[in-house]
Structures are given as C-alpha cells and as structure tokens.
Length: 451
Image (cartoon, rainbow, N blue to C red; front, top):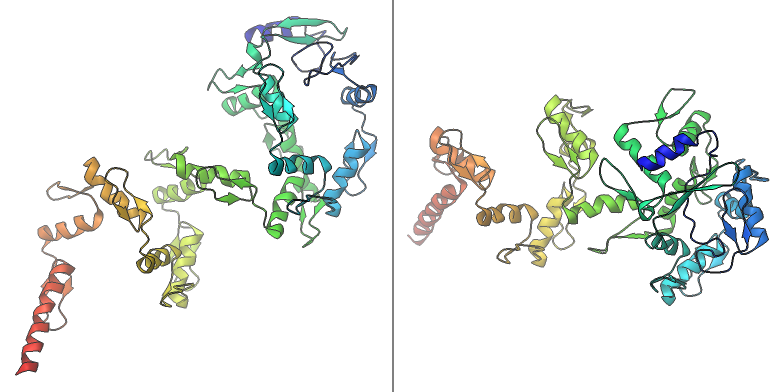
C-alpha cells in the first residue's frame, strides 16, 4: 500500500482519475471469451464494439437518457426503462414456477436459478460454479496474481503489487477486493468526512450519503409506492416498504430459519445466535447487541427519563416501558390465552403462561440437558454449573444465584416479615413458610367440621 502511495505521488501530474484495476489478460474478459475491443483510456477489453461504446460513456460522463419522473440520467436507454418501473410499479416478468413478479428480466433469470439449481458461471481456474456473474468476479479475484496497474493520461501502464488484490486495512486488518472500498472503510478509523452539505454544514464520509441527505432539504421524494402512494427519497427505501404489502421477507437466518424484510434487521437478529455485543457502555463496561439498547441503558447513569405518562407524570427511559405502564391505568390486557382466556399485559408473560398448557420447555441446558420454560430460569440454573454467585449480601457477603433468594436471605438480618396470615395475623419471612402455616388453619377447619 505504501508503494502505491509513493507511485501515485511521483506521477501526480500524469495520473488520471482512473482507479486501480487488475489486468487479467489483454485479450480475454472474466468469462474467458475473446475480447478484441480495448478501451483507449483504461485498457479494459470487450467482446463487442457496442459494449465498448457504452463503457466509454463512464469516462466521458455522458448520460443522454433522462427519467421524466425524477430527472435521474442514464447512459443506456434500457437502464432508463428499468428505472422508470420503480415509479410505475410495473413488474412484467413473472416466474412460471412460483408466480413471483419482477421489474427486470435479469432478476427473474437469477430468481429462477433458485428453482433449477443452475450455476452457469464457472471459474476457469478452479472449476467452481456460481449462479451470478458478480459472484464469479468476486471469486476470481482470489486467483488474480499480485499485479495491478496505474494508467496515466498517455495510456501507459505502471505496474504495482496489489497483494492478490486483497487490500488490507492497516488499522483492523479487514481486507477488500477493491482499493476504493478500502479508502472508504479507512474513514471509519480516521473519522474523515470530506463531503459537506452546503445548506446545513453536516459532513459525510461518502458522496452518495451526501446526495441522499440533500434530498431532505429539497423535500425531494421521487419514488412513490403504487399501492399506498407513500413517497420516498431513495429507491431502496421504496423497495423495502413494498415488502410490507407483498409480505416478502427475502433475508433468512441460516441458524433458525426466521425471515426478515431488511438485511440490517437480519444482521441484528443473528447476534442472538453469535452472542456478539458490539455496543459498549463507557460508564460501566456493559455491552449490548443493539445501539438503541445502549442508549436506553445510558439513561440509567444520567437519570434521564424523557418519556412521561400523561396520567400520573411518571417518567421512563424508553417508549416500550411507557406503553406497558399505561396499561396499569387503562386496564388493557392485549395478550389473551387461546386455551383458558386469561389476559396479560406483557407478551413475554403470556408466552410463559401458554407453555404451562403446552408443556413446552424450549430452553435446554447444554451441560446437563435439563429444560426450562423461561430463558431467565436457564440463566439461573447454569450458575449451578459455573459456580457464579452475582448477588452478594451487604451484611455477610454471602453470594446467591438469583436476586429473589438474596431478598429472602436479607430478611434473616433485618427481621422483616412481609408475608402475613389473614386468619391469625402471624407474619413470616418467606411465602413458603406462610403457605405451610396456612395449612394448619385448613386442618383446624376440617376438625371443626367433623365435630
């Protein structure tokens, strides 16, 4: 990488803006086909002159085809036609196997390979096959020799080593197949945000993020849902929104099979399986799988409770806690048991209750195999194997597996007896002792009945 920077500095007057790219072979493309038509600017080769003409528009910046809906421009007329279907919602390409429709024929072709299992793109080096050409290209970079080229304005190539085109980040070791992607990634470590909004002064690390942000100032939302007429500033947001109407959940968890509308939601879900908790509190060191959970947790340190109950004024750290609290005022119990009809305020309490009917115990101990209805019961149980005693008595420093046992133990020091018999008024330190005592009243009543 240092060698690349030195070469770029030495040739700063001659080097064009053409990015670093691998030269596989001057006469063959990635599929191994003859490609005699070469770009005079970057030396990339093509099998057809028409493909070369379209490619050269990348260097000239020519985009003659304009969308009548949003003004976006394209180098090819067919790209414009495909783009306009985002606005119209048209999906003319239908899968004969499952009936699913698509706005591009190429997407239909890729989709049909799910049914057929076809993998037409084969690597000429190792014979591995792929269902998409893009995946083949990514794979083939693992075979590319350690050679790349800088093309100057005269069309001359200067060779540099590129470590198999696996560009590695010097800060975290992450590798990238494209040098441009490495540069973008490194801004995470440096904090560099070179793209500035002229209206509000906010800076961005990527130009595409700035363009999306500027649409909020212009209130530009060119992408409209044909089903509910809602508008969006980005086509990707429209595509995700439309899955609400279609019910499509294309992102499937390989561990449990659960499907999601967005890939980002799948990634968050997978942390349940991996145990990854990348968001750490700087105050106490506790880690969380979601950034939103960290934000809520940090309010326990600051004392901030921004969500207020309109009925009693009580404050909460998150909206979900406020919603649950308000049910104490309204009496709402939205979760009904379909077996006995009992209602519950919380879905988690309902699920635990429902398992008393089904007998389901989905949480198994990996050490001894014992199963539990609740995750919290498994957590407490596993401390028997690990010896962990996280709840310490402030009076004698004795440790306990769970907080309820600690509470009962502390009463031996304080003398507190909160469990009172309604028959005779005698109090006890634990509910178990009260229940045992109440059986005596039951026996006395039974004796009186006999007499």
